[in-house]
Amino acid sequence: MLACLSFMATLAMPRSAAAQNGGLFLLVPFGARAVGQGDAVVADTTLGTEAMWWNAAALAWLPKREIAIHHSQTVIANSDMLTFAVPSRVLGTLAASAYLVNYGDQQATDSQTGTPIGTITNRNYQLALSYATPVGSRIAAGLTYKFVMLRFQCSGICGAIPVISGSTSALDLGAQYVVPTTLPITVAASVRNLGPAMQVKDAEQADPLPRIIQLGARTRLPVKALTAANATLDVSADLLSAAALGGTAGGLGVSLGYREQAFFRAGYKIQQGQGSGPSVGFGLQRGGFGVDIARRFDALAAQLGEPPTYVSIRARF
Image 1 (cartoon, one colour):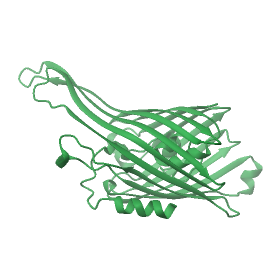
Image 2: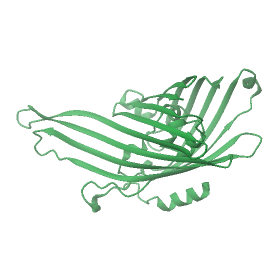
Image 3: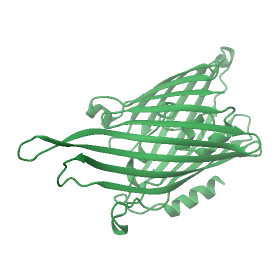
Image 4: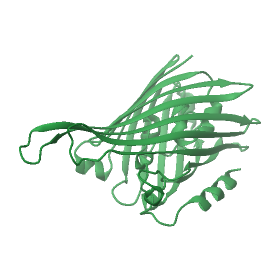
């Protein structure tokens, strides 16, 4: 199943990275748990509703209903996603989400007098539905359908400032497999953003979505000293291929947990250009309530002056 997904995605990948510029916000990492582990989470079975972004198959392992708010803040944009997932032993897991990327507002001014004449807004939107189900006791499969839209507009007397609007639909596919070995290992693959190009004006100017293949593995290391202290150590590694990222990228992540209530996470993203760098995160889980916080410290963030911050607040019931 994993090999099949990878082969399908390889056929779908365009040859030109320059053409992969429709809906680029789909390349931005999402969720505090994922970012804290260097985005190496495609094989993570504990992601909860963050899985709607990375690998919908992980939703199949969700033990209870989950409602969550995921927020990120950078110097470029603020992003918020509201998610809700309902697992069922008979029907599998259904999940829905609404995502907004807000690039802020800017005043439009008269070119001669400098007088404010309007307000320019720039937003990206995504509405998504996911379904995931276990196949036996070791395999999980999932898919996500999403409607993606961008809108750049000006309210007021904006003169020559154009209204830019585009939309399209996309499909994500994913699978996870728990390997029957003494050491608990999960391998996984996801293929994201398969669908028509983002059309803004006409078919000739449509921009293909940034299609992504992500493969990964995750294991829990059997460290006796940690087990005796009611602690766990999970290690993950992912390989990602996307033409819009310049080819291949990778991620490494660790998650140190204590009594399944407190977590320290660290990771490193390897990417061409200025996307490489470390990340760190913390999480608290008490009863059905959980909070996760993460920050990324890549070269681009250093140049912009402020590391991106990610916060996830979730409740399970």
